[in-house]
Length: 113
Image 1: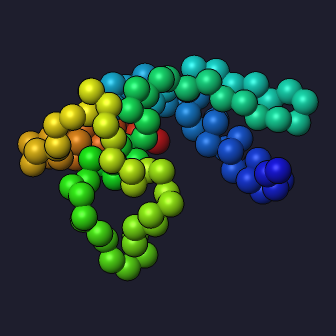
Image 2 (image 1 turned 180 degrees about the horizontal axis):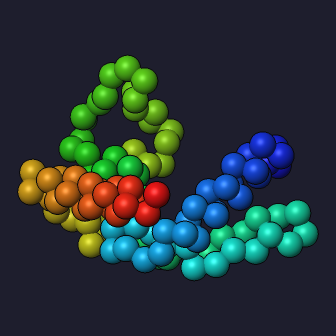
């Protein structure tokens, strides 16, 4: 169960998400329900999940990070993805495009201050 502080933080984030509007590089909030003490969200569908886990799944085999981002073998986000849609590995161009799209989304969020 979530603490009251966690619920309060989620509700603050919801209010921000409502103000953001639509942008191609930001997952949109479609709806929410806060009845009965629970907070439920409906967000735009992301076919491949979140970017962090997608990049971890696409990481070349044997690539291990050091420090606080050390690989946890039991974490499902580190498992290679064998789906047909994800056969190819990511190129430098793919990674640069992810950076550009992320920056565009962040720039949009900044403009909504």
